[in-house]
Length: 275
Image (cartoon, rainbow, N blue to C red; front, side, top):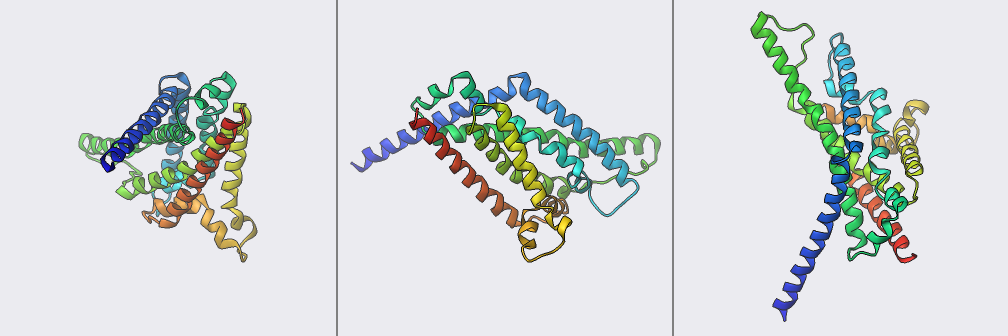
């Protein structure tokens, strides 16, 4: 009997994994095999390159911080960073609802958790892929500096050196924050059938969350200020860019991500059983 129960459990696990992977691959193809995903990638790379060039010019006149600190800690960076998440997530559930395919998905032999996690991890993986080209810049810069030194025998003026912490730390905080923000976008998309409304709600949340971390800059220190420092994205980016890997953002974003995905599952469950 024990062997039979174990065999059945293994079969259920394999079936659940296949269902998850099917939804995950379908969603990932919707990003990578359509112009939609490549347009987002191209725009993100263009903005990254433009802002990196501006940062390097600034650092040629200043010192003391890494390239990534100047790049990710700026308001200009967060201006376009905020709008990445609604673009990625607004279509996850809302587009299915608009096309009339959500009902078929919800009545398929898959669980709500598999649907939510499949869509979430596909969107999250695509988000991580957006930032991979940015980490080619340090090596490209080093190759350029090396070629100039060998070819002309001089070190380029304003040459900037990179360390491992310059890109590992920022990528970690971008991955952590992105995990939560993608979950928020998926949640907002599950609330409505309109992609535009889902995008607006996600953008409004992102703006409020960003400015919550800058409350102390506007009103100074007060009894509740430590909580706002704890939520500050710019302070977290500054710490991680200096190579200070703090566990508090890890706990914060992972907890919020799990809570948001659980809430999304409840909402999709409600829609599933009230059709």
